[in-house]
Length: 240
Image (cartoon, rainbow, N blue to C red; front, side, top):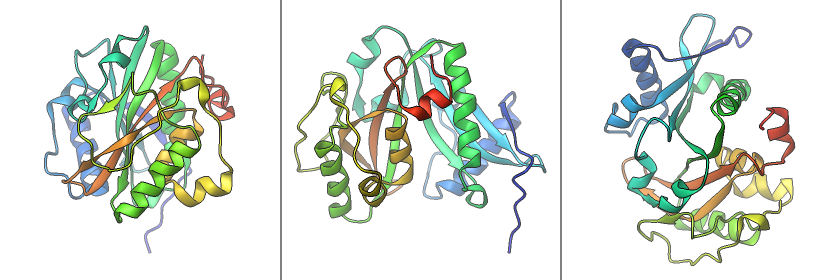
């Protein structure tokens, strides 16, 4: 049985191509079905990494700032022009990876804590990205969509729209001010962990997911407005 010591974790930003290669190696472990390991978007982005006591990379997040690029990877599947026109700096989060041996919450907590400090330092207003849900049948995906609709977790279609409709159900789009929380029990039963974490942080979701045939999953686009988030999780990480 593999033993993992979680007592000595460190966090840093990649500084070299060799660091990026370590990031890509972990990505391949977490997403074995991926075809293109290194993309042009990786070279334009910043990569946050967590290392264990052996200096092995056990957690990563890719961050792309609107001050660094003219376009984002999410635009391949979603129309986000109206979001990009909103006042304030935007940050795209993608490729969240945690080594299977370190998925007890501490690595992702350290990643998010450092990201929050980074967002504050760079005065980021909107944080957006994709939450991937493994495809386990249309019923499961439709349950998630229905749940998001029924609990008013939808983002206005004026800001985000999928480029192609991959579900037959139609969303009743709510305004960003209409956010209200469901019971914790129902949330645990319906939502996958990453999507649940984004909602806990105060994010809203485009309820038109896009299917990724390479990874056999559906991607839900999430958007967090750091200036209006008031959830205790955000307060803990000291947004604003």
